[in-house]
Image (tube, rainbow, N blue to C red; front, top):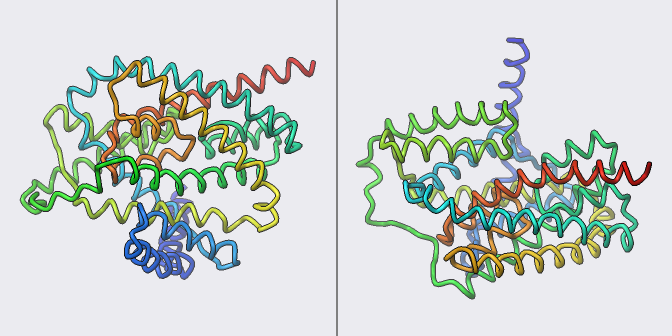
Length: 358
C-alpha cells in the first residue's frame, strides 16, 4: 500500500516537471497574451485552448497532469465560495423550480438528440444516449465502459460540443453584458489572515475526500464549495484570492480542453464533426428555451440562465461565470444539479432500452 502511494506521488511529480506539461505552458502563455492583445473575449481561456488543440492534433506530445488540474479546481471552488452567504440558502428555495426545468430539459435533450444520432449518424442506441446527455462526460465514460459502448464515439462527440460552446459563449456574453472581469485593485490581499487560506484548503481537501467517497458528482468543485461556503457563513474563515488567479485558472482549464485531443485523430474528429455540430445546435436551442422558461420563475440575469443551461463542462462554465461576474454560485449549483440528474436519468434510459429489446 505504501509502495503504491510512493509510486503515485513520484509519477505525479514526474508529470508536473515533464517536458509534455512544460510544452503546454510554453505554448499556452504566449497564446493567451496574443489573444488578449487582439481583444478576444476570455483570452486566457480561448488562446490556450485553441493552440493546445492544434498542437495535440498535430502530434505534439502534451499532457495536463491531474494534480495541476485538481489544484486549479480547488482555487476555482474557493473563488465561487466567496459569493456564498446566508441569503444564498433563502434563494435556493426559488431554485427548486429551475432545478425541475433542468430535469425536463435533460429528458427532452436525451430523447431528441439520441434519436437524431441513431437515425442520421448511425450511432448505436446506447452510444446515442450517452452522446446526447448534455454534459457529465467523465462519469458517463465510466458508465459507457461498463455497458461496452463505443467510448471514442462518445468522447469525441462531447469534446467537439464542449469546444463549440466554450468558444461561442464568451462572444455572446461580451456583446450582451456590461460586466467585465472584476479586478478589485483597492482590495488589500496582504492584509488578510493567511491562516484562513490554509484552513480553507485543508477543509476543502477533507470535503473533497468525503464527497468522492459517497460518489457526489464533481467532488473537486462541490467539496470545495461546501467547505468554503460553510466556513464563510459561520464566520470561521474567509479568504479572497487575488482576481488575477482567475486568469491562471482560465489558462489551465483552456489548455486541459485542448490536451484532450492528444488521443484523437483528425479522422475521428472529421467523422463526428458534422453530426456533433447539429447535436450541439439542438442542445443549445433547447437550453435557450429552458433559460427563457426559467425567467418566469427566478429574477436572474438571462445570461446567467443561459450559462446555467448550457451543455458545456461544469468547470469551464463556472470559470466563465466568475470572469464575467454572472452569479457563479447560481451557475455552479445548476451544473452540479445537472450532473446529478444526468447520472440519475441515463441509467433509467438504458434500462428502458433493455426492456424494449426483450
